[in-house]
Length: 155
Image (cartoon, rainbow, N blue to C red; front, side, top):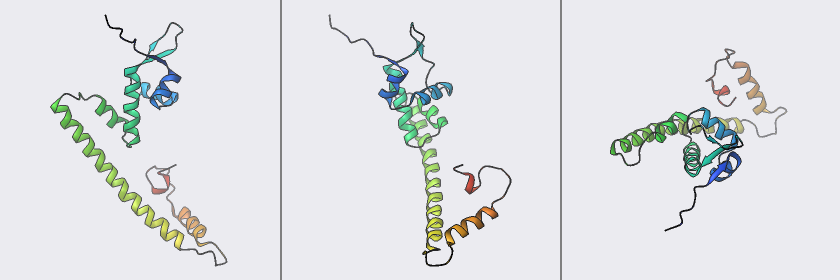
């Protein structure tokens, strides 16, 4: 009879270390349904299996590719052995590629804007034209409180 190693059981800190996902994000991914609620040990601590750690690594990889939680959820629901699911994965990635390409266009535009802003001041004038321009732009910003304006993207 062959000795089969018992599956590893991880507490949340160990699962975080093994997966590269912080404990806080593990809890968040549980709340979002990306990973199943964990089993509880006799001491009521969350316990995770090798499969859970693999799933966390999968989520981390997808998030590193800037996929939304919905995109990750879609990919997690697919079966790697199904031809139809392979097609669904291609559709999901094509959609994500579209988002990435749009973001690249936005970043190129931002780069041009930043270069022009930087070129507006060489430090030899009595005042800084960069700061002057930024103050003028701040005054020109709409005061609607709505998200989506260029200045609120990262706020």
